[in-house]
Length: 384
Image 1 (spheres, one colour):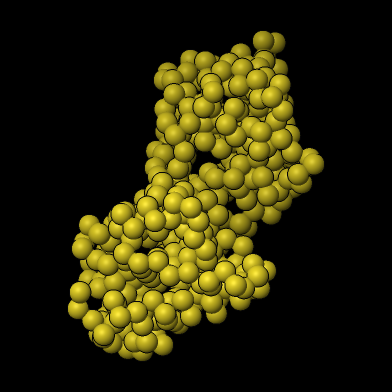
Image 2: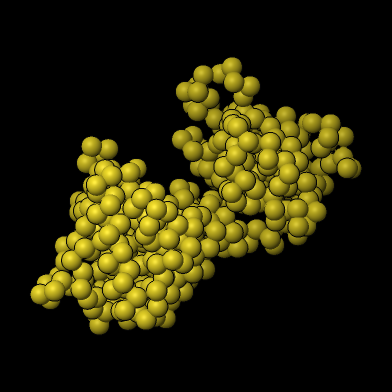
């Protein structure tokens, strides 16, 4: 491999280092370290995400977009101010459902997936529609809900009715009494919009691998509640299929975000895509790689989970398709991180050797990441 010089073009595409640096901050720190070694290098910053935390920032920053803030109802009905964004071309709204319906909005001792609703997520979608956006990019990680997207659809004009024709209350538990879904009031713009959903799970709506069984416990569901909610979602799936004319219950990702995946597919004809690929396509990563010489990616912890199409591996896969070398920078490495070396990553550099206490490392993450980037660039393997 030839040595690099100041004419090199380097694409920097990390995700957020959770708890310490946003993806944009990580990009800047890496650039600082690179320029210490190659001060004239062209460094292209491409903040990345995988559909969860950081998706909003990655897409807004990469496209030169803008942020908006809308008052919505949180998972349990309390009003929250939720941040969302519009891409630089003004055509796409960017929404992280967790900002309206996420676990982070509910105290641990108040979690209740029987009542939690995605209504606020629907309000964010409506805000995007009202802003003139006809394309929605939605990250659905980190939900506190188990309502199959019923709240989301309600905010867009759907009505969920029981046997007496009465409107059901919010939350997954009420779906056990669902008889009919009335879509006559659904927002008129829904049918003319494109909905892209960043989703990295393949769970069906119900069953032992479904939304309630797999994710219900982390949202506060006891075994008894899990069983009840699973039955409620089964009922919901039946009525949903009868309403829209197709059964999405077993489509991979239907169980994502407490079944929001199913609701998005059924009501909005949304397309679920792996998060890192959706973000990479939206920010134009492939185009940035065309004339690159080197790619630097990274995340807070590189381990066996990274191989499941997380940002470092997703970026490396695209870089390798163009024959580019890839360096991954990581706060720490864990069991199974070696697997990433067979998936496109050529070298890994950690921020510390483990001798610095975690709290101190987090507080000094920017400086440590810049130093790690400098060390990686000074490596004899990369720079002559």
